[in-house]
Amino acid sequence: MTTKKFKLPHTFVLLFIILAMIAAATWLVPGGKYDTHLVNGKQLIDPATFHYIASAPQGVTALMKAPIKGFVDAALIIGFVLIVGGAFSVLQKTEAVDSMIKSLARAHDSSVFIQRALIPVFVTMFSIGGATFGMNEEAIPFILIFVPLALALGYDTITGVSIPFLGSQVGFSAAFLNPFNVGIAQGIAGVPVFSGWAYRLIVWVVATAITIVFLMWYAARVKKTPELSPTYALDLDKRREQPHGLGEFHGMTGRHKLVLAIFVGSLVIMVGGVVGYDWYIDEIAALFLTMGIVIGLAGRLDSGQIVEGFIQGARDLVGTALVIALARGTMILARDAHIIDTMLHSLMPLVQSSSPIFAAWKMFGIQTVINFFVHSGSGQAALTMPIMAPLADLVGVTRQTAILAFQFGEFTTPMIPTSGITVGVLALARIPWITWAKWMVPLQLIYAVLALALLVPPCLMNWQ
Image (cartoon, rainbow, N blue to C red; front, side):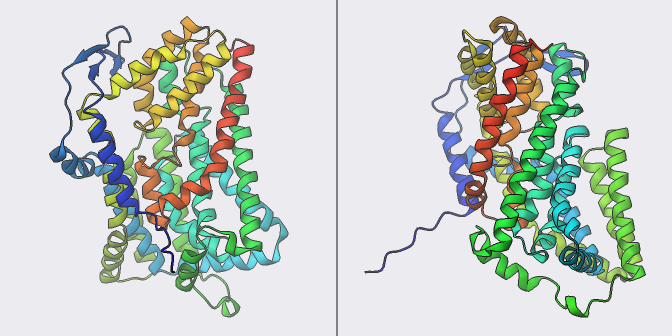
């Protein structure tokens, strides 16, 4: 008798199941609301004003409308993904990336230093971006560079995704100067902005180092035994699409170097714009659109080839756009049902504890749960810190420690299926979410233990 092999549902199906579960929860969880007040131009929650309001259960109609509402709500990031995909498709047409990958592959084979330094250097760079200027969505375009690079070097798709994605996410979660989570949370909590940076710098170093060690261990395993990779079958197909002829490769041409110089210069401008001028997705998308045009001209493509490149790149990412819309729809259902504040209010009594350490750990657990629904660092800070800050005073936890617990709650972002960035990155790399989630479990457990351990010293030293 032939046993039918269990096949996991498609990412779209998984996300729709989550949507349906949240819609069902809106019939069980009562509506609730905190009043807000304006502080320094931001609407902040008043923790003493929670009150129940009429529930707004989300039925079948609301469930079916959630994806299109998610599409509208995530329009900026979806447009950003499509434009970036188009720009990178033009970059691919110039063959400059293929040339760079062949050069690095040749150097990687002959240089022990490059073999050992490649992952640590790039992960550190992306982690610095997350820890300083809040690199988040900006890591998405790099998937298109690092996946083919990883495959060319004998690694797998997961390694290629992890370098920019996990690098930026661990930096964001363990940030020491990120204005979008640390700065806003400290401002709301009444703590001097960017104070306590020394301990946060230690946290960042430890978290980044652990990520690097884990990735280097994993990459070495799959390079030695490719069949151990969860994406082994997928990578066989991808490698057929990669450029060949390394033995006939004679080095990068001047045109290729010019194209890559424009690309690197665009990234430098992006960092400067984000840090110095508060650029967000729309400005970055405009930069990539300009970059695509300039790179096409520098690569000696005609106008028709440039347009075709943009269209092809955007077409390839339509699935990614739909996944992002579905993920955002989960938050919209909970928001429209007015149950987010109710869930937050219900979690607050759980923080009470006889020990500040246990209280801090509970705060970390609550922030982790909230992160499933609210992924924005600034949005989560505005939602939770007005409650967590005074609550920290009551349970004997310093406000700096409460802010650190809030940061650590974002360690789960690379794994949760309701994060538009996570599912967008995975769709771009063509990795099923369940495959990625299984791979992430050991690292996620390491992050959880790390967070619990790093919350102990601030409690013992009464970190202010």
